[in-house]
Length: 191
Picture 1 (cartoon, helix red, strand yellow):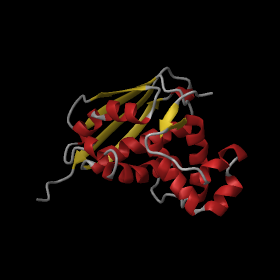
Picture 2: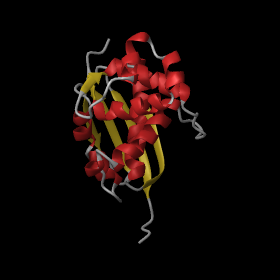
Picture 3: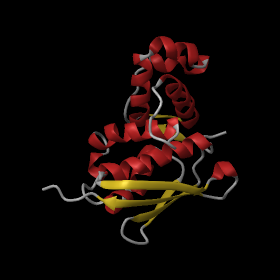
Picture 4: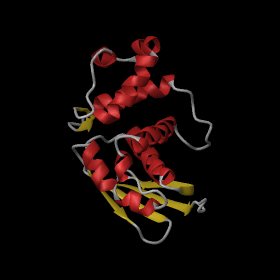
């Protein structure tokens, strides 16, 4: 059981979607989460990570499924959310034309959004990164898929193309740390 908290800025998009689909959401949400359909969510507030994951489980049941092969519903939802986040509250962490610099901001982004866990980014060579996540309290395959979608979104929105993300090590599969490996090509300069 997680005791971690997640920032309201992440919850707001989820709640907004569920409110747009209120009738379906009411049928699928457990009783203890029904309050989110009627309670104001502040971007600066903190909410239980378990609530976040349960709300996401309902969202992916309602949301149209991805047409991208090999992308889970959770990863796809996080990719879409990255657009909102990197055009909005986390825009200052995005470095257009430089996915490596954008990814190097992941530790700061993680601390802004979560009160547990520590993200580390290694950039072994051009167009590659290794991301490690230690001590995150929410251990679940879906949370890793959400993180994977966010990582993909960071690279994509900063100009990466042909993005590949793998998850060779996962705490939900019994490993000590979650690890992602990313590779990408830099988008051609269109100026």
